[in-house]
Amino acid sequence: MLVNRGTASAAEIVAGAIQDHDRGLIVGETTFGKGLVQTVYPLSENTGLALTTAKYYTPSGRLIQRDYTGVSLYDYYYNRENEENSANNHEVKVTDSGRTVYGGGGISPDVKIAQPKSSHFQDTMLQHYAFFNFAKHYTVTHHPTKGFEVDDTVMQDFRKFLDQEKVPYTEADLVENNDWVRSNIKTEIFVDAFGQEEGLKVRAETDPQVTKALDLLPQARALAENAKKVIAERNAAHIMNR
Image 1 (cartoon, rainbow, N blue to C red):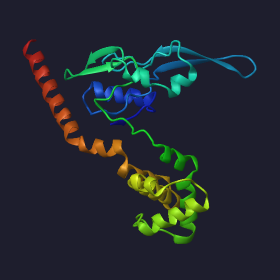
Image 2 (image 1 turned 90 degrees about the vertical axis):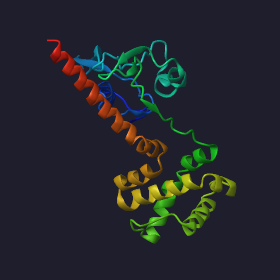
Image 3 (image 1 turned 120 degrees about the vertical axis):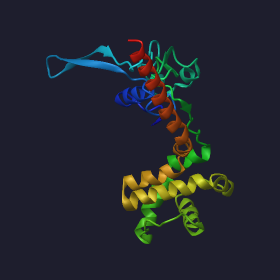
Image 4 (image 1 turned 30 degrees about the horizontal axis):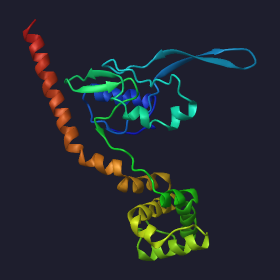
């Protein structure tokens, strides 16, 4: 199961349950840490009070909610490096098969895969909506099929578009970020031509967290098989001791 720092609330509850019961390998980043329950009390003037009345825990007893004491709203949402670099959150529990898991600040993955940090060039491309706008321009005149690939001709059209829109870049930028540029062009063209779902499929083909997760499928299978074996042995011992 893939998770990242934006995985929150119900998704964390599901991820935590799967991890605690050894039913899947959790891969990615430590999740957001939002596990509170609010009860809304109606007030006058069509208003209401949302009061926190409970907290969610995983089956092993891990608290999902992250501690936000003394943390600004901005830092709570966007600046979490210090928290994630601290000693594996606050709680130590074990799964059904005896694996160690951590809680008290989101769900910590079994295998951590950080999202690569963007470069200045990549930020510039995204800030200028270069791929989005190029795709709009390109699909009007070319009508791509699902066999579309970003070849050298498409890259040359992209260069001309950047020049026309006065988006700053260098040839070294395009060479160094070749795979990233081609992936983003193809993704946006597929979104424009075939819809959001098809575009997301294209993006997944080169997403570093997705591709690494595919390599981990044998490890996930071994985890499930070992969990079945451990639980079966434990149940057999329990029956014998009756």
